[in-house]
Length: 318
Image (cartoon, rainbow, N blue to C red):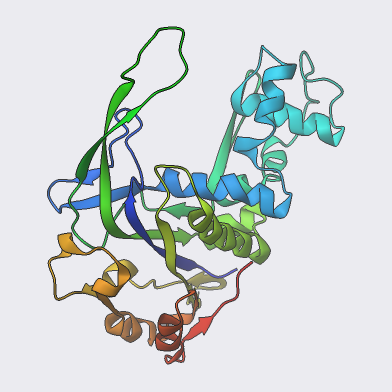
């Protein structure tokens, strides 16, 4: 498996792409005046849909409903792991059942597709294991354009034993428009250790696209995926050992795509208000260290533009 980088670009209109868990307010960098989206938000998007599309077990979501009904002693990842072993027939009961000595816990964890991709830990008494993920995303990913956060107030009334004819007043800060770029990468050696397959990667890319497109919660409505890039590198054998390949990556792929607009960035409200320039990316990817750049988009103009470069190949998802 070859080393690769990923870039996911998606639009946000009048929503909260990634709220702070304590305040609910959109993460914002006051210095750059751009919004921020965390790696955990993207991983959650993927996990939420990957099991639904593939039918494969997802470690951090495995039978969470069943957990509350079956066991009051064990929660979280420990219960999910035990429930999976029970479903497989490896153990006969969840509570009070110890695994056999010599059990390869890490190998069992790698049976979950999200663990192979993003890693996972098991923190059960007497059974501890850690698996490093082959795919990682940048901790905080900024928008391409500068944004203002617009404050709105709304009222709501919910059934209650306490009479409240006026209801409650809520305040929320929404992002009028932001083009967010999510950067990720795959470590080829960790992928080999985890048994990650090309099918696993394709499924991750498909679910990344669909989960952003189909998310319809109040805070996430207004999301629309625009472009997905998968830059695959050409490995060069290391001069002292032909079994080791060295990959020279393209530095900061995201910055090689520039947003150009005739209006102030904060006034952008749709994709039609700007253009994307790929010339710097084309130049970098024309070098020998890049094997292929797979891409997916539903925008025909973008598809035609990128297909004009011989290194860029349209990749069907789903």
